[in-house]
Amino acid sequence: MKKVRYGIIGIGKQGSFYASFFKDFPDFLKDSELTAVCDISSQREEWAKENLKGIPFYKDYHDLINSGKVDAVIIDTPHYFHPEIACFAFQKGLHVLSDKPSGVYLLQVKEMNEEAKKHPELLFGMIFNQRTDNLYIKAKELIEQGKLGKLTRAVWIITDWYRPKAYYAQGGWRGTWAGEGGGVLLNQCPHQLDLLTWFMGIPTKVYADLSTVGRKINVENDVTAMMEFPSQAKGVFITSTHDAPGTNRLEITGEKGRIIIEKGQLILTENEEAEPIFSEHNTEFWGKPKNTETIFTEEEIKPPFNKDILQHLRIIANFTEVLLDRKKKLIAPGEEGINGLTLSNAIHLSGWTKKEVRLPLDDQLFLAELKKRIEEEKTSSNK
Ligand SMILES: NC(=O)c1ccc[n+]([C@@H]2O[C@H](COP(=O)([O-])OP(=O)(O)OC[C@H]3O[C@@H](n4cnc5c(N)ncnc54)[C@H](O)[C@@H]3O)[C@@H](O)[C@H]2O)c1
Image (cartoon, rainbow, N blue to C red; front, side):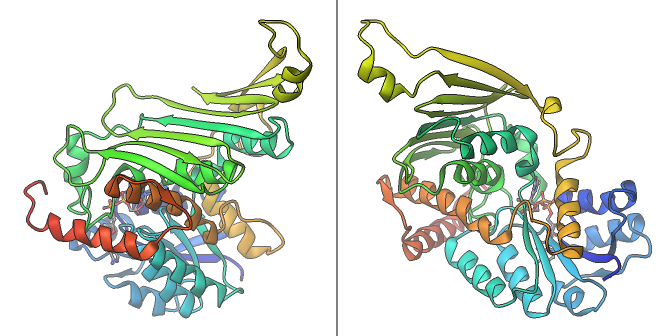
């Protein structure tokens, strides 16, 4: 393969952003080209004809996939379609780079992963662009090096995904169970849920509260979840799309130290001794382990990524690089998309049933509960 020929399916907000990369960053994407696009909307067809002159447009993704014009597809439709389109692309011998989330419910994503497994020669990636954030890469490295010792807690407050009323009005699918299958958990937080499971593993149990605050939408835009990870570390995940100014703060604690990521820096605090060891021999009433602090900013962490290269561009460039040299490694393998979705589905199920959810998740029950909400929505007045 000389150049990787990409087709983008779903040329809305995000798909058109990726399409612009091929024009705006030719040096960075020199080993690839955009050779086809697809969307079901006539408006987007008009837009594509105007802005992507000479690039064939298809109204049906089957036609794009069967066209012989592409080696790989980038999937950027609403979430429900991601697994269906990926499966068809695999069956027709195309590589797949899917945007997040991997899908809406586990059953469809399990099917997609099964299909991917049948085609080991095809590359499967997810656009988890935040995995290219140098601070998160550093956090992962520090955890793997054992700098924090045995992990005891992860707390993520991610309430700066602010979305006003106008956002939900943009596409009829937004904010609905039928169109989107969830709210902040499925649209904005797949990034954090992926990273949380990347750092900590998939929880073994989850308890959550979901609500909808200040927007006429059917899905949740406010979530508080508690969880336990396989290491028995505890977790708290708080997110919303209505808080202003909002916060994005991740804190991961272990027996030997703590990482805080907030406002473009990572603060690593290392205890001189692991806390349980200290507590055993310390005799002072107010004794506490001594520690040292190191602050990393994104610019200081080298390699891997230059801050000026857009995260999504890094993912497409990495996918291309791995396609051309299979010894290289994908930043976000497609099969891993199920991890964050498992946590997302567990949070939803707990919030809906008001019960603790144990994993592995009862994915049939999840789907039945989701379908119930889709049915109720048909008679609701919100959207
Ligand atoms: N990685 C990120 O940072 C990021 C950011 C935003 C959105 N996304 C993801 O991208 C996806 C699209 O989001 P968006 O904001 O671009 O939405 P959008 O509504 O702007 O675009 C979606 C497009 O898909 C088209 N479409 C719908 N069904 C289709 C089908 N069956 N075949 C072909 N086209 C179809 C629609 O007509 C629309 O133009 C979502 O899954 C979202 O989660 C990812």
